[in-house]
Amino acid sequence: MSLSASASSRESAFPSRPRVSLIEGDGIGPEITAATLHVLEAAGGHLEWEPVAAGMGAAATLGDPLPAATLASIEQNRLALKGPLGTPSGSGFRSVNVALRQHFDLYANVRPTRTIPGVPSRFTGVDIVMVRENTEDLYAGIEHYIDPRRSAAESICIITRVGSERVIVYAFEYARRLGRKKVTLVHKANILKMTNGLFLDTGREVAKRYPDIGFDDMIVDATAMKLVVAPERFDVIVTMNLFGDILSDLTAGLIGGLGVAPAANIGEGCAIFEAVHGTAPDIAGQGIANPSALMLSAVMLLEHVGQREAAARMRAGVHAALVDAATRTGDLGGKSNTKAFTEAIVRAMAK
Ligand code: NAD
Image (cartoon, rainbow, N blue to C red; front, side):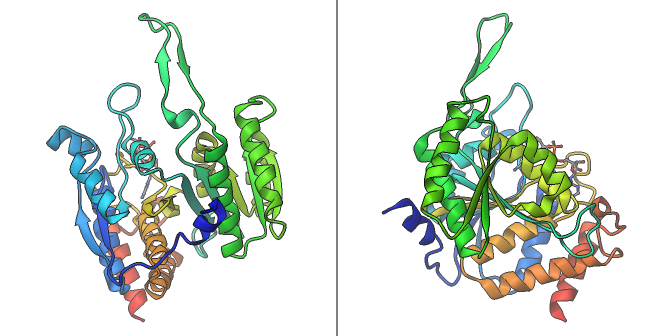
């Protein structure tokens, strides 16, 4: 099957009540996951949850941050909703988030950022979809110290033509499916001529197959500046793993912050949905976390499995509760907590 054909057939038929592996996550994960399941059910979503463990919690209780039973569950279900997972910085176990993406070859990380009416932010009219390559680049994790004294360290940036092509094709197919006008490829090929040059060359080749979609490319540093000066010039962005990680936090900032930024990790026949943000250890356990990003990720999951009515109801409910300062959480300048915000969404959906 050609790459473009497989991309367009990705959303194939799902059962009326698909089974979904559920990782509640670390830090604020359990709080926002409970709120998300509550709202999803009230929206009329039909999903059967299979709770599984991963992350710091699993490392502490089961001695393994990514237990075999969790991998087996996702292997079976091919769908997961995931709360944020903590990763120790420097030493300690490798990121479970990265491991999951690599294990299931979830090569496209799709991060839509669209201005939400009423949510305080410096910009209006932002509507950007970041498609981040999810399995290669410096995140392949191939690094070592050059000597026992750790006087220097090296990291290898892996970019392949196949890996570049499939994510760039995904971005173009996504643009076509969603009626978008342009794909901008972000790189640093002026300095990293081979790795980033390969990604850029592949993009130029793929773009020729999509004459109906505009294409341009931009160097990452210029992109960072242009995103905060004129975000409206961007439509779909496709980029490599590291740049995509950094720039998608930036685009989240354009629409009010990490609290409202959802994401989907997409592979061939497998998808994991998660918020862009992390475990927010500074507010964990206080009941004040904003569950919107995970809820909007669950909306993407509902859309992915074809439950579009429930998805639309849930998105409208979240947006309605976000419009009102009285029901917004503290990160968005509100005074509400997770529970009251969740109840406001359910009330809005019942209207
Ligand atoms: P973070 O995203 O957890 O937090 C950054 C800031 O945003 C904090 O001030 C936090 O309170 C705030 N914030 C984040 N989500 C929020 C929410 N839903 N509601 C209100 N405020 C929110 O980033 P960090 O502190 O750099 O990372 C903490 C841990 O999360 C690290 O172990 C990191 O590796 C991990 N992490 C995991 C993922 C993931 O699971 N996909 C993503 C990023 C970071």
